[in-house]
Length: 393
Image 1 (cartoon, one colour):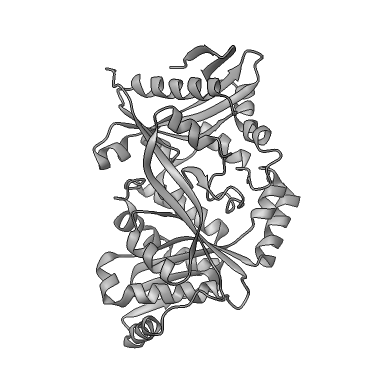
Image 2: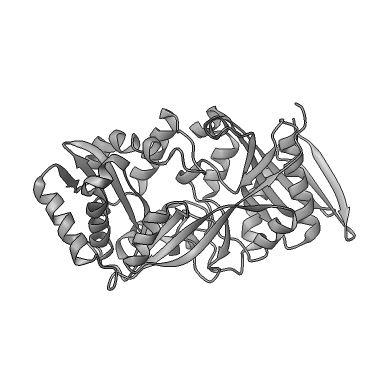
């Protein structure tokens, strides 16, 4: 049920209301453009994606409730926004009663932060929930967290959020605590090298013939094996603190999204005796074209995106995993070897830089391996949590 919450602080009146009209939706969508108009590191989200989420045109909403909230000052100017979420599958997986939130933006004003966070708490309490967690949407399939380190670095396409430095302190001032961090790593193709013994192990694993690395010439080949790739998500990632078991419809959507941006020679699949057991997803960085598009997709923007994907010298890595039982059989050495080969370039791409995005800090063994191979932390995003007083439905 839509609601309005009012507060007056420091002489400024701020109201938070549910987005129920097209005019309010336009304000919700345009607010980041106002906040980041002079921030070259920010990358806009496609406006069509906002509208799709608002109209629940994503399989996520088959099991989750969501509501767009907009904060305005007394003159009717938009000063904050958030999408509130109750994800029943997440709560069932983790034994929680949490409200999640995403798309949070706010002006640099204590009254705005206070009113917006208070409205978020009230939204959760009205549903009998006892904590706020975010910013996250549907786990690792979408970028999440609040940027707290790396403000001078551009966001990697739309795979991660960007925000002003005042966001983190605003969360903390309202009682939010760290839940976990997501790290993005930089790898230099010239120095990212496997130790000789690891590379020899990878070569030995390849020579035995049980493991195989699948390479692709076109998207049709990826599409044929896509269902087997999607089936790896839940066994490898569902129990992570930001994730939950995706439905078949959600996995189909993830597959569709992957195929839209996949570059065949950057995607690698690992099999064992013919069964898909691991994956490595790389993408040419088209951040510049996304900035130029300004969140809108038209013929000129599409051409720019295509040309940028062919000319870029930066690699984005957003997905690497192998089923646990195969890691001890040499699978880890093999996937690290393929990672190094991808970073060092392919027939079509010569990279000068690579970025591995949003790795959960809980994967400490993999991160330790990456650091030993020469990767360094480039950005840090923090997912916050706050316990709140639970009220009956």
